[in-house]
Length: 211
Ligand code: TMP
Image (cartoon, rainbow, N blue to C red; front, side, top):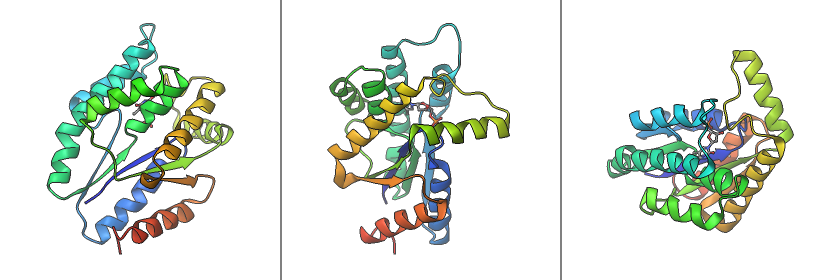
């Protein structure tokens, strides 16, 4: 069993790539769970709402970070560790690296502080592989606007940050990937969903995690 985290800017295609992998695992009769951050547990979903809502009592950056970490701690103990103990694969839409990129880098809290809090929240549990779907901020915005229009939804509090913020998020992810390159793969998210799944599938075969 393996623990996989999917990271990237909004609209980078994390969900569709996760769905393709889930279909493959199902077809191979491999047990897995899929989850997301913030969220995944009852407490985590409540925190998600508090973090992402646009209100006039928006959390300041330190409070925001601690809420993400609280959601993470709950998820790790309630869902991720038990699933791995039952030999299930775990696929998560975002994990610790999002805090490094968004709060550590883009909000400017600092890499080391976020590293330390990630460590505290997860008790050192790290994904076996983090898949970064790297996309330009322009393309991410285009896809997000399209989705908002199509589904008649509005950008949440984090999505509403400006371009400069999202550029820093992108750079933060690339920095995190470079720091731990053996546990990361960086995919060019401008490719088609089929191409992205093929690259991921070949990577998992190369690692002998799938055949
Ligand atoms: P999602 O919409 O991809 O589920 O993620 C919710 C938003 O929260 C997204 O804009 C990224 C952001 N985020 C952080 O800023 N820090 C974190 O640690 C996590 C997990 C997500």
